[in-house]
Amino acid sequence: MSIRFGLIGYGAWGSHHARAIAATTDAELVAIAARSEKTRATAHADHPSARIYDDYRTLLEREQLDVVDVVLPTYLHYEVAKAVLESGRHLLLEKPMALRVAECDALIALAAARGKCLAIGHEFRLSSLWGQMQQMVAGGAIGKPLYLLIELWRRPYRMGAEGWRYDIQRVGDWILEEPIHFFDMARWYLASAGDPVTVYARANSKQEGHPELQDNFSALLTFAGGEYAVISQTLAAFEHHQVVKLTGTHGSLWANWSGAMDRDFHPTFSLRYHDGTKTETIPITKITGEVYELEDEMAMMVRAVRDGGPIAATGTDGKWSVALCLAAQRSVDTGQIVSVADFVRGG
Image 1 (cartoon, rainbow, N blue to C red):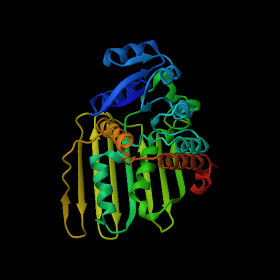
Image 2 (cartoon, rainbow, N blue to C red):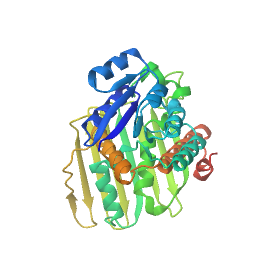
Image 3 (cartoon, one colour):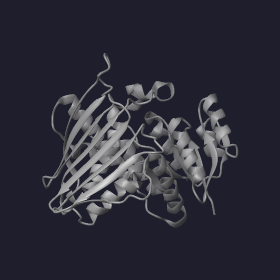
Image 4 (cartoon, rainbow, N blue to C red):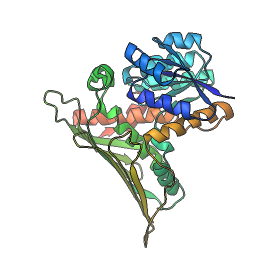
């Protein structure tokens, strides 16, 4: 039985979601909602068997759907996600989950009340590279994890439809755009350390007159047992290069991914492991990159809806990521160390 998908949003990333749904076994892309005439025409040309709508509300009213995938500018996430869950469909929601923790809590409660899956688009959790690293950590390969570095060097963001990504009122803040993935990875890799306790962050901008558009960002995330993570990125560079380094009491891991851009179909990547005595390269046989992880994400949704399979990043994971980003932004604004607990509670 095919799982029937609806897609809301058909921008640069939404079109990749559509491609991934269409490529997934036992998934059917039934309908697409897109606001502009141009994107609707493109969606129809790319997926002629899908019905195209100019309003997501009409799509929800008219279509028989199992899952709705929401790929919209950040400021629309809560409104549309709430409507999807209220309509009785399972939901795949792009990150960030919402602009406020209270909205995340409301979506989590609504999904539970309706008995529906709520998955957040932290696709790195489905990566053959980053996932292999996490499995080795969870399996004790490096002993107790102590130190994590996640660093990204990349070209500037795309503007987004109607320039939304460069409008702080619509994007929320730039920490919610990409560093949110790395805060999620930090919780994932350092899960044995418990919940993060504090965050201290700094940022600056190369864009005169727009300090809110933070091209350079770094954060120190601490845990109760002394473990900590360093997250750092720049949008003032070129191409797309990500490095993750992790050390523990009995070993260390070093992974990297490089492409001409984030959505590169032909990246280079590697994972090296040191057990305290010798170093070896861990083979990664499945190509990795967010364009490929999207296909794994759609397959995950099919299994979750059909068989009750697990969700890689739950609503709770999405909420934590939003809370950490908001806490980091408060730290940038105040220059102070910020307690994470206050933000998880909706502060």
